[in-house]
Amino acid sequence: MSKPPKGIARFDSSAAMVMALSNALHQRPFSSPSQSPTLDRVLPALNLLPERVREWGYALGGMAEGISLSQAQQLDIEGIARWVANQYPQQQYQAAFVGSSNGAMVHLAAAMGVPWLPQTFLCPVRSLHNDPDDAQKGMADGKPITDALLAASPHLAVHQMQDPNQDRLMLEQMSYFRLKHRKLPLEYNEFLLSALPPGGTLVINHCTQQWPATRTSDRSFYQFGALGGATEQEYFSGGPRVREYLARYGIEREKWEPPAPNVTVPEAEWGFDAHLMAELKKLANSQNWKLVELRYENPEALSFVTAEIYRDWYLSAGVIASRLVVDSFLLMDPWTTMQQYAIPFWLTFCTEPSASSLQRYLDRQPPFRNIDMLLFSHGTESIGLASVERWQQLLNYATDEGSFVGVDPERFPRDFATLARFDSELQQRAPLLPPPEPLTTEKFLAGVQRYGDKFQVECLLHN
Image 1: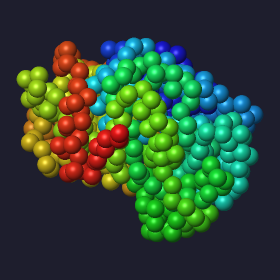
Image 2 (image 1 turned 135 degrees about the horizontal axis):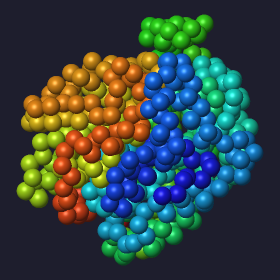
Image 3 (image 1 turned 180 degrees about the horizontal axis):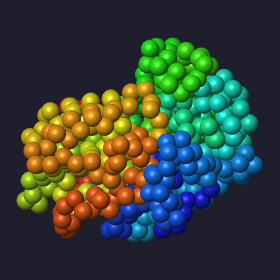
Image 4 (image 1 turned 90 degrees about the vertical axis):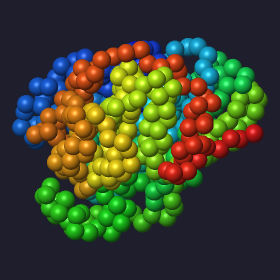
């Protein structure tokens, strides 16, 4: 599997989920989000070092993904789109997904054996000696980079994203720019034309999650904060948890002072930019494809529906699922999950709101015999981070065994070696068996119609 070209980060949800899904479609596990054998060998040794050295090593690994300002000016949008499309088997499919990044959607696509083309990708740009907490300077310093990225393509929206709560380690050496396709890249268009026959189904994965932002041009925005453990109110107005967090890191301020937001836009990482909708409708009509819009507000809403669809899918093969696999951000392996006849439940992050989502799900279900849990470490004692003890409480819902998988609880949230070992440990949790016949588009649509209302997930058919 080829490395991504410069300008798209492997450590981000978009690229990692493409690789997780493509591995499943190639009938193999997703053994390495880094796609770097060298880095995977180094990570266990990094885990043994003191906290600050671990943090420095993690940030350094991320910085290697960053590009320079001059490279941003020449960003190869079609090359990135070509890399995405080339990850999948080049064949015809019953359906294809386009749109928002979402781990639950990746599991649906894996069960159906179909590809997904992300609208959004993260372009990290090297910016040494940043102050993650200085939002005013962050926006000002980001303007030349934003202008360069806007010039790289007239069909991109640029969302500069500064989240000192969850991305503190990375933001000290780089700036985050999430780019959204407002028009299909030629490589996406060509892939869909070859992959979807007449009568196929094009699914728009439309997460309507919004966030307040500051408009910096007609196609660019500055987003301070992000979906996770802290609230919008805390990012923009402060509060006790913000004061405690800043004091914990020795920051001499009581709250952040971001630019005043003047617009509400699709959230940079998870939200869907609806500018792409008209072109998708036109393309579907011209090719006689069915066009379906999967719409939901909160990324984790789709996790509830996906879990129900998986339960029914296994039941149709004569299997009563008794194992739950809890994914965490980019830690997931759809291929292994299906091979173990496990129900997936994807969480955006290791935060208290995500722990509450999992608890709501478990409270509504017959008890699982086994619960296997992955925990993504982002290296920061962030606001709203759920403790290992909180996650252990949720594992205790299992009647036989609830286990952390590939997790060193004593080193969380600086357990960076989990990236290298989560998948090999997951594969050892249960026998690997041939999965059921692929989920049909009809059963996928029926499942969303059946369970979606309960969790604010809509399935809209477009003519």
